[in-house]
Image 1 (cartoon, chains in turn red, yellow):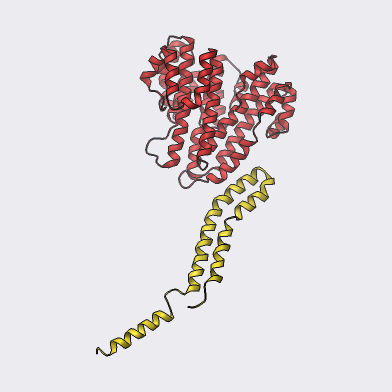
Image 2 (tube, rainbow over the protein chains, first blue to last red):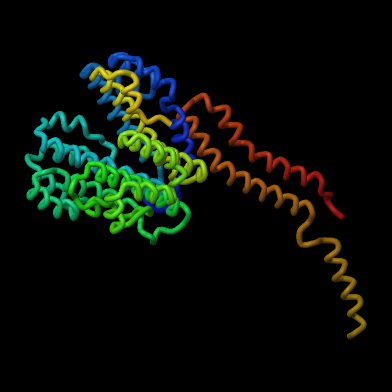
Length: 349
Length: 89
């Protein structure tokens, strides 16, 4: 498929909108909340997860079945998106879906660090990014973290990981490596200024919002944990909300940080979330409110600019949320949490 | 030499009067052609969106078909012009 040339927005957006509309609704979540894990799998069999549940049903059961079916459907769905889209749209979607490359690399690193078996790691990988199956297999089969870093030479992660690996060897924690992977993804995400036109502009706006939200979350987590780390090191460039220097001062003083966010671009979208943060003092609630705000913002963009990449990205976000929600329900059920506790973990628009 | 000028002018007037560069009927035909081109362009986008929707859900076939051919009304309206315009002045 050619990277340049016109894009088939009409076709892809129509398909994506239909899929967006058939995601689980409030009512369905409420039904799921009352089910056991086996019932959840059976319920999923009647929805768009049917194929995956049927294919995996003989090998897994219970929560594992739900989990694998979710991963499988997610990967298939996003591969479909790439298959449909052409031209500029394809280029933008593929760039965004590299998110899963970053996710896969992080999973492999964590697996090696925690000593999980190859099989466990492989089943957690989501095959929706740019890395091919064979390459993922090689990553999983790698003996040590160092050989993973070596395998990734020549990919986008190379420059970021090389310097982080030294930090990892000194400290012995995974944080620098994970952070490097995130930064490699986000900092290559936003296309440079040379890309002109309304489509590129919108794409940039959407991604800036995502980076900003990610920065807010990181800053708040750091402020909350009181860890003695320099927040600027964990800052992702490319957002519009704050810059590397400011974030250090803002983290130290949480109330200024909150006022600062309120005054800026996303003040309206986030006001509910910020109120919640000020009242509840609970970071989890705030993070879910952030997720919800990002979902709403992406939906808003996709209605304002129907023939653009925005509806596709909004769908990707919504689908990921749905998968996270179902997983939270299934896992919560298995762990014996109450309905109310699980409901708090869900992000429902 | 100057005597011929009035005669020449009459001839020139006669030729322009009797056969203009574009006859009314061919102008109307052009109008229909342009309208059809525009309808085709409009249907391009709607059609690809409709096929996308039908691929997701077979039940949308009827809706998709109707929406796709809506711009066809442009051509029908343009076709009226052909009958309204007289064949010659």
